[in-house]
Length: 327
Image (tube, rainbow, N blue to C red; front, side, top):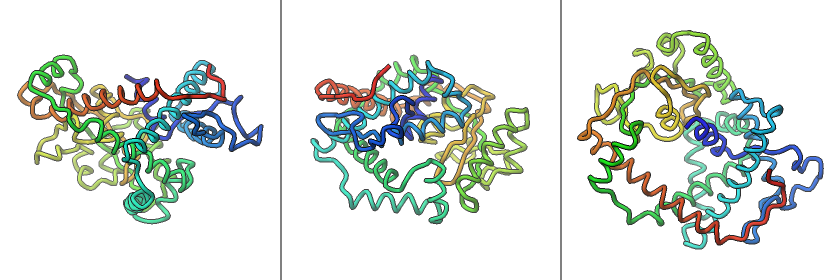
């Protein structure tokens, strides 16, 4: 589960490179690193994504440079992920759900607005070592992928038997968590400064400082600060427990992979800033509770499996040429 979380983080900004393949020594940025059905993924794209992820892995405490086994594993995964991403975009075009330029620009403007100012948004791009064009292309990919996902899975359903089987087989999903949060906002500070402050707080926590006390004194989230960072259930006022599907995104993936008493070891980026989460307590849901909570979650899992199978078949049919060596 921890491996999946580590690599899930890497995939969000995509993949790390391998020294021997870098275009920096060959000065050949536009040469193909990979071709998928005749479409090329350039050496420049390959190197840029790899360099960014290498920085993320190192910031998380991994010694990439001196770990040949990890380099080899990540390099192989980078090729697979970039290939799959291109196959998804091609499938979106074939199914006529590829997102056009106007809608991509609109979504980009909406995301920019969430950061409050151009300076904050630019700071986020700089902290991720990403250009605006690269950010926009990522938006196009995610929107096109989401549209393809909806098309492929639109007729799927779940029943009570499905939910009961899932409940018995997936105890982590059939739980509710009491979570504390510390937010370092990017509203009044740059992205880089906020991230640095969040990393400093994580170091304090790792040395034994009280999460609750730091939340009271340093968190920028007014709704949880006075309660030592305790999050409330967004669907039920006064309920201190959250269930699967209520947090969403990177924060949910991280929190539902923690044990009671553990906290996230890397800052989690959100539109409001950087979050640090701690799981205070884990409780098992009753089956009746689970039926209300897990139906949507189980349906999403079922959809994900069907979508992955759809992409696997498309990949099996694709002509894939690799011009950088796999390990």
